Length: 588
Image (cartoon, rainbow, N blue to C red; front, side, top):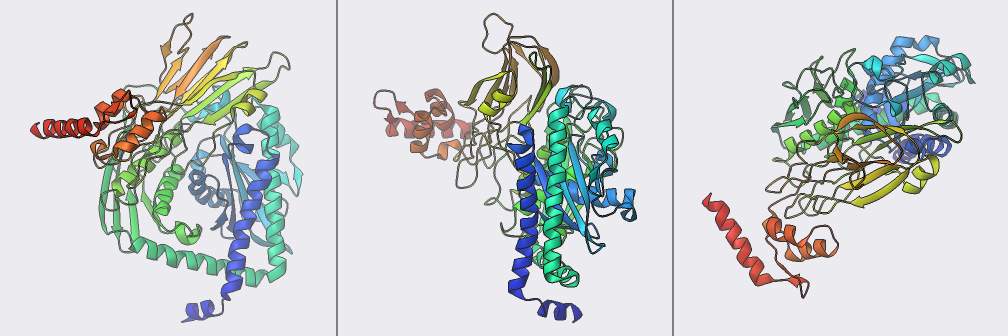
């Protein structure tokens, strides 16, 4: 009765104003971070996230940037506040942390957060997380096939970076001493501090307008509203047990694939993600932290719900997960975790495939399902500056029940943009010698998967260290409901230079490049949805016309014959060929 009385006193108009204002706080934080950052990875690719937490460290609002980070926030902020002590934080203070085993992800994802006060009373915490292009370790860009966490870069437990509004220069110098790209990294850190300052200022303005008690009351109402809506959304998911298995093709050191398993139990208003059966953690860059795996579960569940559902503690409290400590989905110290996102996005793909039988209209076929990370380090011979660059490349998205998969996009919780060629070339002494869609890389189906992308990095004048941290060495994304799989990924040194040896690289390697070398990074295509023999021949013709597939593939995969002279579908021959293919398959 008391709860109902509270909600009866909530003004619906003011509720929406406050809810929108809280979201806008984090969006404005994101805008400040992006506009003041130095690295292409943050300012252009938007590899960062911002959020606001209440005084009990419950997530209240977050900017629409990187969903993969958000589960990390949920784990990291409470753990860090508890470790450091809320009583040790004063107005204007900010902590910096990237500890993977204290609620974080891999070391490149560095969080800066601090308390927000109103008249010396704690309101909550603002936080910004950014993927830094280098945090030290065994290779430029701090990604690579390492075997323990200490090789991956500087490990930061919660430490005070800003004290009462002033930078702690000793701590800052200590951090930058571990890092190659000092100027850019320093700029990105200051951008995070600026974002938090903006968030703190805006929250203080909201509290001044409504008063702290009224503010707290509406924050509680927002959480309760989300909780009720989440329960209703979960009740629309068909009850049952959903299972799926997947694997990573290569762990970086052994020939053994990495086994992943899930069992999802949906019962009324409860969804339980169980990862019993996943491989033990390895001395290889394939280990996901608990927070990373939680992010996969949260994203998968959220993607099945209404687009306007808020994401805060009222939602996260319904994400229940069992990931056994010491496995590749809940790694323990001192396991390497730099490639944990490769595992995390494959887990995401596996979760959607598990849900597919019960919700075929909502589930897409498999995507590239890998982060597809590329990084390089190079010393500018003119300025002497040590440059580091990091990118996560796009690939083919899976087809859906009524549409083709998009070409060359990021997938699932990976919401970054592709780095523009012009910007990369203007900042680094190298060239992007090719950027194109990959013909015939789609997964054939009634609706085809999206095409993969080729991006070639050419270093004409200088030596460089290049890292590939990716996957899909063995096979591409699978099709669904009769759809075929997409083309697998390829990583090739000097693919087109007749004077240099062409070499196929593994998906997890660090190589030393000589002047004139080129690395070709070719991502996979998405899986198809439904039988390719059911695809509208006119769609096949359009794909041929646009150069997405060739005549041979149209005939062999889709059973469509196109007349070379008229450039039109030969419908009689197509019908006959498709009947022959169906008859041949049924006889087997």
